[in-house]
Image (cartoon, rainbow, N blue to C red; front, side, top):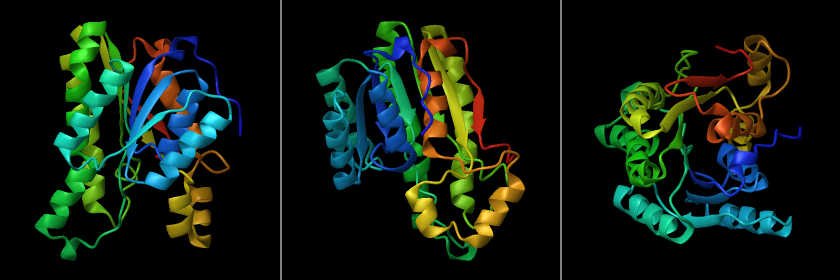
Length: 255
């Protein structure tokens, strides 16, 4: 793994991450912890999340604080965030990473399925932002980082509801950036390409996918979770203090 840049402003900074136990979220939590940030995260992957905390503590870092939470339960999510803020202090960085890119057939999508996908991939982003806003106002600023996906840019097939939710992230980011800018709160989007998480490798990265990656990316090699975490660190740090309402695409030139 390449060594990430060091950001002095992240030392002691309080960070909240959704879906921080596995995949890209795990890399984000690890990266912030290694910068000396105070990190809390939620996930439904209990064993993986607890193992991450233990491994970081064993490596000599301040362990992140994990809470099991289903982000589709908005009252529980906001309550958990309030409890963590009471324990650690108001969050200065919010990373809305959690999502699920389950494939689906247009003709088989029911109203219940549609609502469930919205509840996972779109709805929590607004309500986590709402939850951290009072604290960020008190502190005079903060950074909110919402995750989109290159899937809708690339006209990916097989997940139209997911693509809809990820396209909507751009609108939410830009609207929030305008409303929250006067309080010093920056709001940006990170748009990853096809990142080689274990889930992607297990479910979809076959020989045909390998060929597609080589053809579609401008840069050779695989896009890894650490590549996305590097961008998130920048947006959480003071180095990006005048960046807001933007979409930062990390896809090796796919789109």
